[in-house]
Image (cartoon, rainbow, N blue to C red; front, side):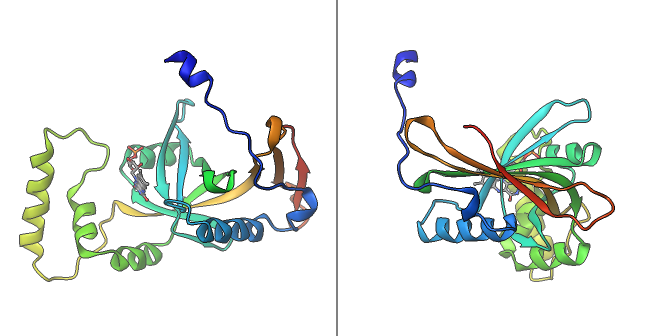
Length: 218
Ligand SMILES: Cc1cc2nc3c(=O)[nH]c(=O)nc-3n(C[C@H](O)[C@H](O)[C@H](O)COP(=O)(O)O)c2cc1C
């Protein structure tokens, strides 16, 4: 097993990335790469690893879906009382990672996290299929439950209770926005000499922010 795994490797040759290719705004550049990933039919192109940590620094990560880029923030939706919700409550910092193997690319985004407005969460919640809305209501996300039928029972009960009524956004469900402080674009290259271009927000409080960009070693 060990020897099989250690012999798995890919030589990346599809593309390259230079500081000069990336423009001045990493959000605009992210959107360009995202469109290219869509055109390349990357599977679950908006899936991203969301890393959080508890207040004592214990790390955690899981996949969520990017649902929009708004005013320079990356937005996803979830249950505020889930494990990630509790971690973000006590430590509102996160890292997002996209891996698009078809393009041999990775994007890594770090920043502070805040809840989106209730109106925005409502809009998104009501745009989801009714079954997903009831699913969100029936699942105490991340809590221990006795078995699967517990969940299915809650789902059925809610379906009967609600009939065709409009479903209100539950108080414990909504969006988070990650405001990037640092974004790294990674392009796989041959012989492990990958390209990594980083944008870092300038922290000068007396001036409007600007992005400093530089290359880091692979
Ligand atoms: C492709 C994919 C997309 C997912 N998208 C979401 C999402 O947008 N929101 C969400 O709450 N969970 C999503 N999940 C489930 C999460 O990975 C996770 O199981 C759940 O949110 C509970 O995480 P937590 O216990 O760390 O809070 C997704 C899982 C996968 C595999």
